Length: 463
Ligand code: NAD
Figure 1 (cartoon, helix red, strand yellow):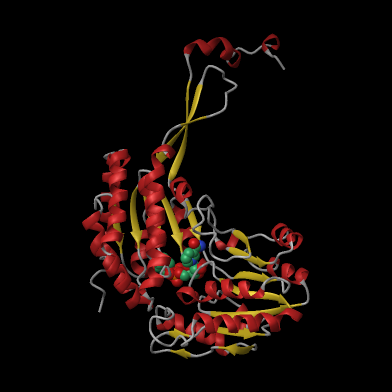
Figure 2: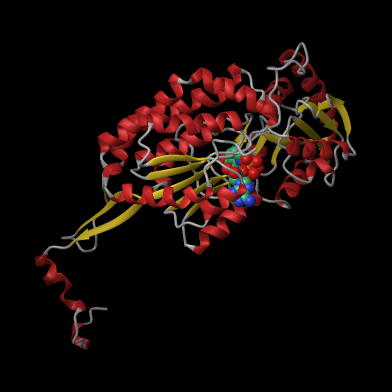
């Protein structure tokens, strides 16, 4: 049976036309109006906190506490920061003194228009609220495509949006590939797509037909180099947290560890010790670790695990019925292993022994540029060597994942992991803003500008 919260396909074009008409009315440009809509966005989350927690539990088996930290708290902070600051971002910018000394060049901050935002399943609130707050603050109309893999969360968003936000300018569309395909046929003024690289290519191709500008926030495998001389206990805690929170379904989760051979044993011991501290009663009990969203994802992950030639030293349990995958550590994984063939997106951590750091760098550089690259070391020369000799969306030393909520840092991929950078504050605003150049020239400047007019003569030339 079709989910009743799905948007009928023949509605999609009407929604686009109606958003365009409302945007043209100019209502979304009013600063007071934008502030009110941003406040409403915050209330949508605050008033319905329990319902969102319950929906995340149903869709992803997430505990209330994890949902509040990973999604609701971060989203509210984002909205608040944008609410407090966006007015000054909308002011026209003067530029440095022009060669046309009498002119007044300015950059106006204009909304792009009617924008489309695609949201993936793994952080359905944070990855919706953060771009949408930027789009509203920048004065746009927006259509948000939520993930069909999350029936409870997506239907809740469909229900709440028109109750809190102005439906003539902001709407949610829910549905499967057919609905997404229909959306992509239309001429949006910007598309922000967060999701897999496979679908990212489909989006880019569709956008090219209308020359629509796009921001692609994609995934991939995030390498983590561990220097065995570092405090292995702290490294193990941070890496295991990054790999197991939201059941490893975080785009910037450490996907695999590269460690010199002589450090593998000690690092695994530190991971096992940390596991017992994090999960003294194991993880099978509902609420201890999130689940995968559907059987398709479960089967994909199970296949990767079944085919590995590495040795499982922790976890390894799975349950198709409940889409459960235990935190799992696999050692002695080789470069050509199944677990190294694609983004894992589950709480499985392959440990890949290397001869030295140069081999680790070479391996990383031979693959797609990752969204994030991590190095755990206290050796500043090694850190600099890794940062300077690799390319990735972000690079982080002795920490994981926290580059995303750090205020002031743009977040985005590079090459196969995407383009652009948003997520925090002004960067979310800028993505949806057209920097429009303006120039006003006074008549008296004719004295200085007369040389440009024909007829030309050698005498006129000043070069
Ligand atoms: P997905 O690509 O399957 O789906 C994302 C969106 O695309 C959904 O709204 C879906 O309905 C739509 N979609 C799916 N198939 C489509 C098609 N054929 N045509 C048009 N639209 C289609 O991604 P997902 O499984 O929901 O999310 C996981 C991926 O997203 C991972 O690769 C992860 O790394 C990545 N991700 C990236 C970031 C980032 O900020 N860079 C953040 C979160 C997730």
